[in-house]
Length: 163
Image (cartoon, rainbow, N blue to C red; front, side, top):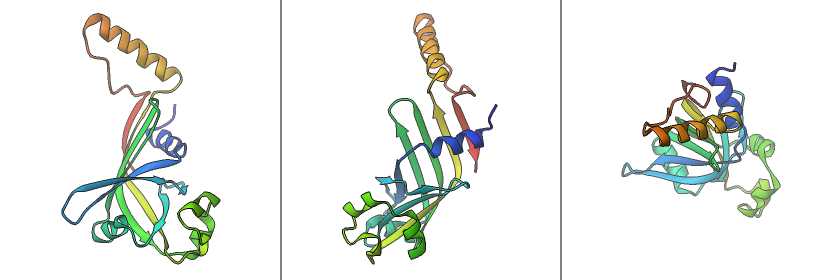
C-alpha cells in the first residue's frame, strides 16, 4: 500500500492546471487558474507568468500561497505553502511550451516572463477514481437508505500530510 506522500505525489503530477491562491495587500484571498509548467520530485510546482501581474506583487509582499486542483468529480488536491518569484532564463528555457506563446507572443525570450515556484508544506487529496469511486457510490447508497452520513475520511480515498 502506498503512503499518503506517494499518493499525493502521483496525484499532483496528473493535473495540468491549478488555482493559485495568494493574499492581497488588503488581506483578501485572490485565486486564478494557472497552467502547471512542471512538478518536481519534491512536489514543488512551477508556473510561468508575466512580471507585471497582480499575483507577482502579492507574492513579493506575502509569500504564503495555496494551490487547489480538481478534475471532474474524481480527484481533488489542495496544498498550502510558500511561493516565490524567480527570474531564471535557463529555467524558462527548460519549462517553455509552445502554447505559452498565446500569452507571450515574443516567445520564451519575452523579457516580461518570470517564474513562480510554489513549495508546498501541507497537502491534502481526495481520490475517488476506480474502485474508490465504486466504494464511494456504495457508501452513498447505504447512507441514503439508512439515513446515516457516509464516511468522508476513508483512508483509501483521502490523505492529509506535512510535506
